[in-house]
Length: 228
Image (cartoon, rainbow, N blue to C red; front, side, top):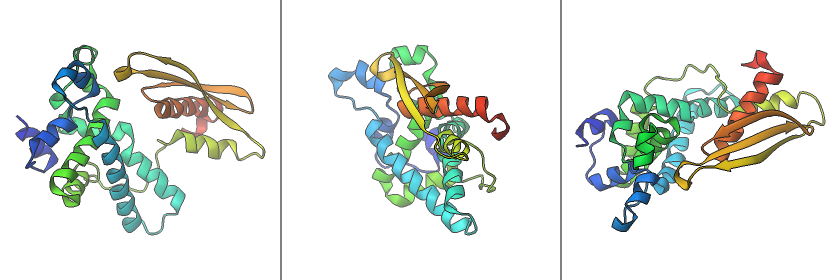
């Protein structure tokens, strides 16, 4: 069942239950709670850290002339939701996800937030199954296969907004959660970002962090369109 996915990952699991766990979305686990099925959120937590470390080490070794700020942005480009979802699509990861009925019907297999989280979960599952070299191999193949050029893209919009706004002194940026809707497995958060008390951007996302990034993106588009 998982052979095609493993071929794309470049790694064959000894314990495929770990891979199954990595592909189990919370909506599926909630619908099958009586069977004691666990979702992939704990693996996602671990995979996020492993991915961040491997990418940071790669950039540190391969871009010795880059200052810390640029390295941070390059790492953000590589590990952001958009890039992870794009790479997941190349190996059709979404087709192997275990989703609840509602998530299946609403297009969850194509949702960037879900498939990007699954990438991190699979990385962690490989680490648990075959150690650090197994996880690194997947990251090298999937995330670092196309070597970064060093050109900066803006994916950390919060940091970019802060740097743009603070070109002037005494500027205060504040993010406020203004709304939260949906069931636990598919929540939508609304966040407003204000500069000196004036709302300059409103964002929506599947987590507070993503909503803040979206709000910052909207603020940059409104205040500093030349930066995009």
